[in-house]
Amino acid sequence: MMTSNRRANVIGAMSLALAGMVGAASAQGDRYVSMGSSYAAGPGVGQRDAASGGCGRSLTNYARTVAQKHHLDLVDVACSGATTENILVRGQHGFPAQIEAVTPGTRLVSILIGGNDVAYVGDLFGFSCRSEGKGDCKVSDTAQLEQRFTALPASLDRVVAAVRKRAPEARIVLVGYLPAVPEDARKTCAALPLTRDEAQRMRATMTRLTQVFEATAQRNRVELVQASTLGAGHDACAPDNYITGYRPARVPSWDEPVGYHPTQAGMDRVAAEIDRILAK
Image 1 (cartoon, rainbow, N blue to C red):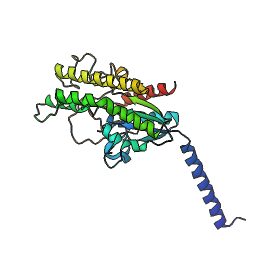
Image 2: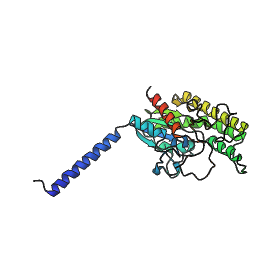
Image 3: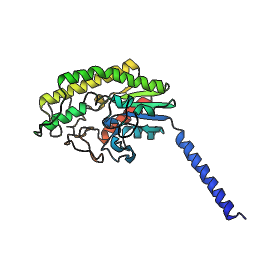
C-alpha cells in the first residue's frame, strides 16, 4: 500500500511533469514581436492588458488575434504614444526600448510606427480641439511637418535594420495607419469636426504617410499591410468605421474608446490582412 508521503511525492512529480509539458507546449510556437504605437497597442479596444500600464495594450488587438490563430509566442511591446525613438533608444512607462524584445530566435515582427513622429494623431486632435473654441490647441506648422517627414524614412530604415541585426531570420511586416478622414476630405461629419481645409491637410498627411511606408517596404524588401487601402470607406465618418471619431482629450483610462484610434473592427481587419500575408 502506498504511504501518504509517497503518494504526495508521486502526485507532486506528476504535477511537475504536467507543468513541464504545458510549458513545452507554449514554447513550441515561434516568437512573434509586435512593436509600434497606439494603433498597434489598441487602447480602448475591448479588455485592456493590465500589465501594460500606460501603454494601454488591448487583449484583442491585431497582434493577439494573429498570434492566437497561428499559435505564435507573442511578445507585445507596442505602446501608446511611441515614436521610432521609443523603439530604438528609450522605452516608456517603465518599459525598455521596444527593440529589446527582438531576440535571435524571433521569427515574426510586425511594426506600426511613424505616425507620432509626424504628429498625425496629435494634429487631428489639435484641429478638432479648435472646433470647441479652445485657445491652447496644438497643431504642427508647415515647416515642422516638412522637417518631420524628411526625417521619417531614415528613422524607419533604422528600425528595420535593427530588427534584422537582432533577428536575421525574422519575417518583417510593416503596418500602415488606418485613415480617419474620408477619401473625399470635403465629406466631414460630427465625429470629425474639422474645417474643409483642415480635413484636406490631414488627408494629405495620411497620403504622405502611406507613401513613406510603401517606399520603406520596397526599399527594405519587407512586407506591408496597406492599411490606407483596407480602411477606405471605413473612416471616422463611416457607419462601419475602423477608426473612432473625436473625443475631447483628457487623461485616458484605456478602458473606453479613444478618439481617432482603431475600433475592434479595424483591428480585426488588419489581423486578417496579416493572416493573408503569412499565408503566402
